[in-house]
Image (cartoon, rainbow over all chains, first blue to last red; front, side, top):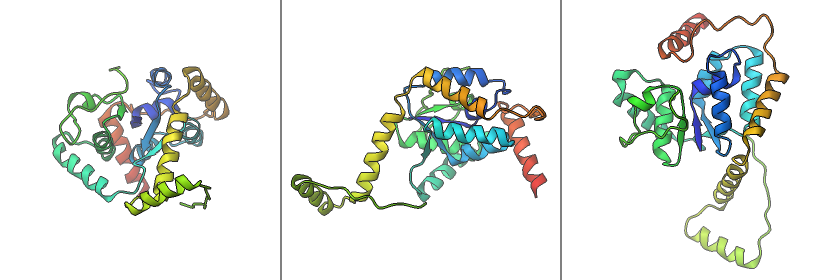
Length: 139
Length: 94
């Protein structure tokens, strides 16, 4: 499973985004993988994709690329884990979506994160301190 | 979330297995949901690069940007700029 972060999701749905072509190439490279997204990432994406056409494309991408919703079940413990993670990295001012990706990655060793944010490579780790596996190489 | 009841026929052997699972604390409906998710994941992850390229091209053909769509005005890939943009939008909404 590949967890999509806000930046590649926005880049996929906006042809004017500076990384649109990169995101399309990455998507093709990840064709054999199942994609997943969390609600926090969707919220951020909606801020950056405010027009009707952009949101139609976001909806169509979620539907037609079979992007799964994560976590799969309502889980209060997940919120607490994300808050703990945010406090651990408070000096770096991560957002809620960053915490969700890190915690989800920590809950399933097979998950990889598709992101263009360098902090996931340089600074942030899973809750157990191990590196967060990346789905695409550095761009 | 709405849900619908789905009936599944089981032969004698599977009935026995399901009984044993139930006695050991497994909820059969959860088991079925998990099995459906797993099989769907396998199916959905079997696309090809060409399939995905076609899907995205079709989406952009179906929902093109209007010609008067204003530029975003900030770089989504700059964490600070993106955060300021979201906060600014929230302030305007309030």
